[in-house]
Image (cartoon, rainbow over all chains, first blue to last red; front, side, top):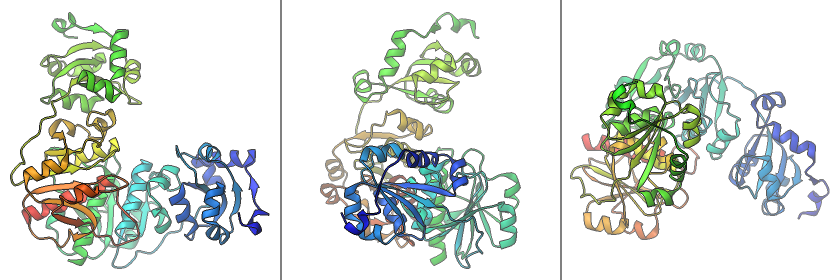
Amino acid sequence: MNFKMAESIRMLSKNTVKFIKSLHQKKFRNQEQKFFVEGEKSVLEVLNSDFRVELLVTTTSFFDRYSKLINSSDAQVIIATQNQLENLGQYQSNDSALAVVHMKPNSAFDFPENNFVIGLDDVRDPGNLGTIIRIADWYGIKNLVFSSQTADFYNPKVIQSSMGSFTRVKFFYAELDKVFQEWNVPVYGAFLDGENVHEMKQISQGVILMGNESNGISEELAAQVTDKVTIPGFGQAESLNVAIATAILCDNFKRLTIG
Amino acid sequence: MNFKMAESIRMLSKNTVKFIKSLHQKKFRNQEQKFFVEGEKSVLEVLNSDFRVELLVTTTSFFDRYSKLINSSDAQVIIATQNQLENLGQYQSNDSALAVVHMKPNSAFDFPENNFVIGLDDVRDPGNLGTIIRIADWYGIKNLVFSSQTADFYNPKVIQSSMGSFTRVKFFYAELDKVFQEWNVPVYGAFLDGENVHEMKQISQGVILMGNESNGISEELAAQVTDKVTIPGFGQAESLNVAIATAILCDNFKRLTIG
């Protein structure tokens, strides 16, 4: 272990355990304006991102492997065992690290010209939200906007299922109808009776709006949709999961942007 | 409650509880050649399918609502409470029914001319398998073939996440390399260095082969792939979830079949 760092390394205290466990709940995350990230891949991604890491709970082996990266951050380092890490977080198995990280402010961004924004109207399942963030990152759609009833971005399950992509997107929570009115760009909404995305022509920008898992896009927001779009079905399944549908729309829209 | 049926209706016995609970495990499902299906949507789908339902554990209200459909099956009916149903299955909430159903034999099918077959090489997560079955059903790709290490089709989580689509697909488990050699059709494998699916020309039939969540397509099976294909990425995510990738390939292939 690096001697210089070793001076400032602490062991895990009861208070720190209690603090980190409180961050499993949205109420305490919001109060503290902090959240946690666990597992090798996600912790490495967050250390390499513009998020500010306050605390890093790490096994000695993870610390030794990544001491250079860890030293370059301002994080307070705490050494822990695998058992302690697994007790702190949600992973069944974690022999690497867990980071406590500062939230970013909920700041609106301007519409990114000639690109797309994913809008989510009450997508409530954290696994779906995390998967959608990963898809957005794959397709280079870096901007997302969420209704207030959409799952919490900082929920540990969202962080986990985004597979590190949560570090590379911009987002804010807002009243979507007001945002769309202000932006004044095409809003593509996923409906069962819209234009077949396989038959659409070249497009250049807009919002890809996805609705709630059970109810789809709300009536109020449907009024803001300028273009209804549909994923063609060829069989008998009644619907697709919202993350699957988002992926298919992103894939078609990126194809149509270039094509 | 229908009088004619009421004569043959039993209450839930300890032995039946024990039997149904054993079906949570693959070992006992295989021994009994039976599995279970729970929740309103899935139970209605299985009652309307060509699966043979042996036993239907139902609340009185579900029975009353669907007595005609239930009477038309050969299922033994057992009345239970919501609590009992939730104790038997995996759903947190189930106020409808749970069915014990006969497995189908593991019979190979011929390659369906001018269509696609989804091949899965060790896709191990039951949620991914169920989601892929739902996607296959959406795209009218009714035939699937699985390596022996792929998740068990009859796992309750597969049934649940397929959202009823498990009743509408054909499948078998086999040594995939032998099957592909026999079929002698194009095998499209998802790799990171294949042809961009957005640039492919019209295609008509073949296998869409997807690999394991961590390791992708195995080396032995890669030798059977005739066409490597790639989903173009525009951002920094390293990969897509296997179910998401399956959906995007199915969507592109269906577009290219018609186009």
